Length: 119
Image (cartoon, rainbow, N blue to C red):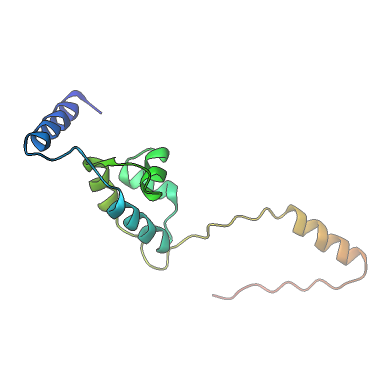
């Protein structure tokens, strides 16, 4: 964050306080939006990158643990869901154990038939 951004943020904070407001807000709207993004296939790393926030900030907002800054809330709400049809799988399964089991079955006399998905 550069000096002008920092100064602008301080000025906005002073303005909100002068009007009787607060620089922070409950994380309810941000948490609901994070849940929405996750349902549409976005992973936390992609949400953090798009919102330019740190990992603890994302998790604190998602779990509704304490107030978050208005700036953070706006950055989270500005993130758009991933393009439909481009969702990634959240599971990663290493192939090593499967490969060993298949080799053992072939060695035991089983036929190995591999079918690949067409499409």
